[in-house]
Length: 194
Image (cartoon, rainbow, N blue to C red; front, side, top):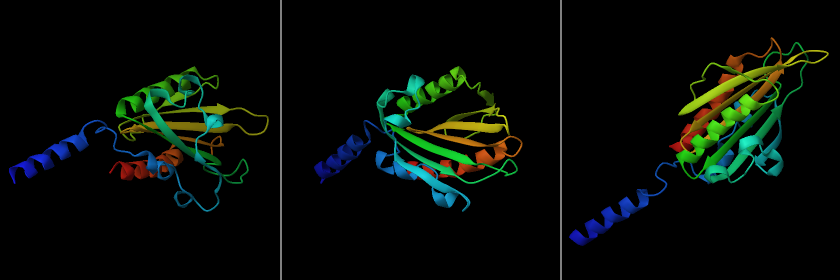
């Protein structure tokens, strides 16, 4: 009896050693991005699936196996609109899962550095308060007709890094619109983390 109890304890300890700081499993990836039911019906998903070479974020994060990255998923949405349309027009939702928290922390740091180095002139904005750590930035893309406002929110929750890139017409897209979507995605990630 004592041996059986000791064996159970050893098995439990053995199961918790190793990737105990990696609670989000790679098979959860498809659930970590925004889903059609998270958005108004006007949005159409035009791309969804495992991230492949063309989906590489480039920069410090170009290597698909960076910092123990296991895999990534993406979903893109759009809707029709004019310069008078309020809210988002195009939405890109991404999630990457890493072997451990340290890899996800490194990836988040690289994402922040890459955004700072970007030729688009992203400007940091308020900390969005998502996951374990997060940041957000914005820039306006000038055009001959109507300027386009772009937001990017990136956060780490456990061993996953998520991002949301949203654009809409200047003065028609507010940070609050973007953060509402980011919170929906974060709830999905928190659920997967258990």
